[in-house]
Structure formats: structure tokens, C-alpha cells
Image (cartoon, rainbow, N blue to C red; front, top):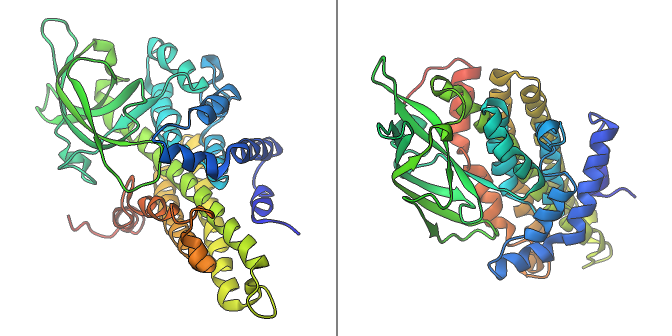
Length: 396
């Protein structure tokens, strides 16, 4: 009899190389498992052992260029890594940020010096990078970002000032890729730019936000007060900031989908195993359609979300940024809805046991809810599809 994991593993659209990667990462994840992950959360520590082993095995940098220590693959391969770790109960949230967003942006737009400085460490896990875009007054509206950079006339570098909020893993990241704005000398308008700010840079301060999310990676507010940066802290071309920004945001959406699908698979597999063996009357509860049908629907929803995620990754890896943007938003939306329903139904299937520590499902409630609101809310995804896909007018 096949299991939930087996059916996902036998995807017809994947090459044998990708299926081998899926199996290998799954084995690594199961060696650590949900108990290891939750112990790290309870003890307020990081999953460093898993992160470091994943780095040694080449999984963290599977999407980065081979000449800088990566695997030479793309977002399709990296999404497999995060999905399979999530399906084993131990998703690494920083995979969304460090190699997917920051690594991708630096690989595509960084100078050779910047690539040599950061990519080998991001690939093997010895370096980690956070990503700072959200601000207290600029959530979904990135045009309201007020973090600004101005040229330092004395050094030729930059002075960066502003605030960020809900930034993951700043305390364990060696640097944060900050989205700021600079003034266009021709128009006087502010335009987005990306800066690498190392954690110990004077004027760069952070404060932890207490969250009800069971995750080793913590959330932070950032305070930047005239942070002095060298000229080469700017990634890429100052005039191509918007292109570079979306080159990072599309992978963020694809990887959030992978995170969600992995968690959904974990919850579904626990529920299916329970429904097969839990017997109240003459047959196991899984024989009753009121139990079986919602689980079957969860399986369908997860698989459909996964197919859209694979499409988004394919388009992104093929260099079609515009089409990838549409697909990435759709994948993130579908996966967020699918994981929320899968986790809720899994807990409902187990009844009171679904809320016990033994089964490890209740801790997924907040994590699955996050998938519907971050990095972009479901409503903003619908706005995107309505305007860009359907051509409907904008109301805001």
C-alpha cells in the first residue's frame, strides 16, 4: 500500500535526478523529524545540526551557481529541499530567505566580488542572510517604504536610515539584505535599491518580537540610524532596483508555497495514519466518508498547489520573470489555502489527540495561518490576479 509520501515522491513531471534529490532530502528530514524540531522550539535554540548537515550535503545551495560552491540547479530544486524537510516535520524557514531570496539576487545581480564574498557561504550553510523589506507603515504597499540611503560625501559610500518589522532570523544571520530607496538625480523620485548590511555594523540594531508561532527562527524589528555602508554594499545597478527586488520576491512566493505544501503533507500523513488504525465501531474511522472525503480533498488541494508551484519554479528558472510572477502568486495563494485546510482537517480527524503534544499537529495551526498572510496576504494575491491577469481596474 502506498503512503502519502510515496505518492508525492512519484511525480511524473520530475526527472530522476530531482526524484533522487527528493528522496535524499526526505531521508535527512526524517532522521531529525518533528520531535527534534519541536525540542529546538521549546528550548529556544536553532536547528543548527540540521542546517549544517543540509549544507554539507549540498542541499542549501542547490540553486546557486557551481562556480561559487552551489549545485547549479534552480528554484525547482531548492523548493524540493524545503518541501521535503517540511513533510518530515522540520521546515527550515531561513531557506526561503538565505539561498532563495538573497542568494538568488546576489547570483543574478551582484558583482564578482560580492558573489565571492557571499555565495560560497550561503551554499554550504556557513553564512546566513536575512531579508528586510516590510516596514511598520509599508506592509503590502512597497511604494511606501521610507528606509532611505544617501551618499556619504566623505567616503563615497552610503548612509542608510529607517525601520523594518517582521524580519526573520536577524539574530542568526551574518547580514541582512535591506530594501531601501535612493533619490534619482534626474527626477528627484525615490527608487528601490538593495543593500547588504552586516549584523555587527554600527547603527544597525534589532529587537525581538514575541510571536505565537512555533518556529526556531525568531522575528525582529530593525532600527537603522545613519548606518554607514561601503559603496559596494549596494547590490547590482542602482537604476535596476525594481527588477532586482522582484527577482527576490518571486522566489520568496515559490518557496513559501514549498514551505506550506511540506507542512500540509506532514499533517495529512499523520491524519491518514491515524484514520487507518483508529477504530471506534466496527471499522477504522477512515472508512467513513465524513472522515475520508475531507482528507481526500486535502490531498487534491495540496497536489494542485504543488503543480502550480512547479510551474512557477520552471518559469522562473527559464528566465521568464513576468510569467513567473503570476504563477508564483497563484502558487503561494493555493498552497496557503491548502495547508490551512489540511492542518485543520488533520486535527479534526484526531479529535482530542490532535491537540496533544504527542502528535505534534496543534503547533502547526499558527504556522499554517502564517502561510495565508505572509509574505503577501491572500487578498493582495487576488488583487494581483484581478489586475494583471484579468485586466480589471485597480481600486487603490
